[in-house]
Image (cartoon, rainbow, N blue to C red):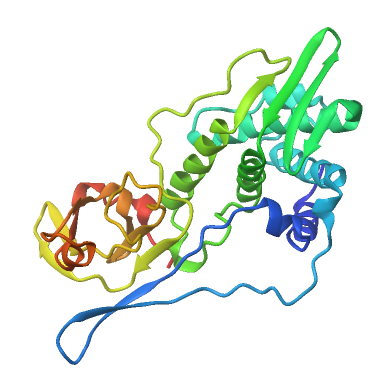
Length: 310
């Protein structure tokens, strides 16, 4: 059975390859501090996180066959350890014994099923695996069962990212105290639902649809702006209201431009924009509306899953 040291070693190799740049998505955290300038106006200072790109990365992603086999192997080993699966059992038996009670368990099980088709196609039917600039079109027959998978390049990136986040137990790019369990579940759910949209065909020996996640909370998975000292406008026993800081350049949530979210630190909690109610300010321009925009949270929503990692 693969031990944790072996898992960590393989993950380290993958992380130091250019597969990490091409195939994995990170959620960037940009903390904000609020200050009052000499004119008495609130100003916001955004802090960027820095990543180390100083070393040359191994071109593992160019050897897509090896990259897939390596990542699937460590994913299988991780799940085998976590759920005490039978060592040496078939991948189908491993799939059957994976639980599906929570949203994360459902994501694990479905990612395993999808990746199993890619891995087995590469291992046993490579001539029937059409790899094109990151996307896969797989179709082959084994023991009178048709196996097929059509998944786009973006879908593969979501798949690999989900698997890496599962193995590491955290969202890539999120660091320090901002790694709440609620943000983990919400961003994983977003990545998962986005992945499903990129799969146009799936067929295997399981013969059922991919498992759905009921009542999931989607948190935006790109840039997130945690506000260290938000301006509290009102507070009582039921609600707390902050001045809302909008970082999308628009307050139209339905716009394709609306990809970022602001989080608000309140006591020991990091409250995501998605569970609050935003009220736009008055004015014809975006700048005017933002001056008096507010966001209100119900205090009943302040749960342990939003607690900062202090």
